[in-house]
Amino acid sequence: MDHDETGCQAPPEGPILCTNNCGFFGSAATMNMCSKCHKDMLLKQEQTNLAASSIGSIVNGSSSSNVFEPVIADIIDVQNNAVEPKTITVQPSCASGSGERVEAKPKEGPNRCTSCKKRVGLTGFKCRCGSLFCASHRYSDKHDCPFDYRSAAREAIAKANPVVKAEKLDKI
Image 1 (spheres, rainbow, N blue to C red):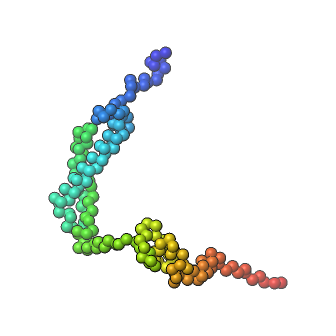
Image 2: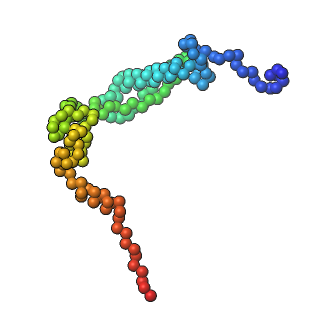
Image 3: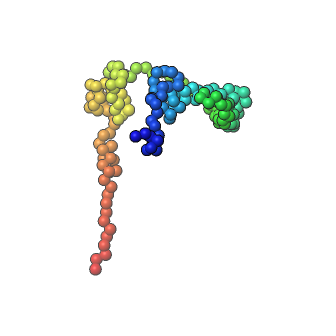
């Protein structure tokens, strides 16, 4: 049977190779590119959008003002070779425009056990009293923990089990 008689369309002649000639097969959903080339093309377009918006913000001088200004950037579509103007909203950075300085956190030294000053690194145990301990001092009786476990347990039980009182009934 011929496909003219059945009314069905013929399948494509064969798989379509990627338009970037990378050797992989493309699909119509990814503009006849393989998934990697399509992802790379989208990434390049996004980078050009960011570059165009940053250049536009520098030219317009919006980095010193706190008002959001739309920047029109000409974006070139790689596949269609068409120029499309798009509006991009540029937000000025907090540190440069507001005059506030972000303080850098000083680098902390290695984590050490509070009792024996042994280096614990990632294997340290944080106690409820807020201190860090090694494996031999992690239990509360080994490091004379000031945390009151008894009152904490009583509060937890009281929260979990509220007092329930039945309503009083009028007796006849």
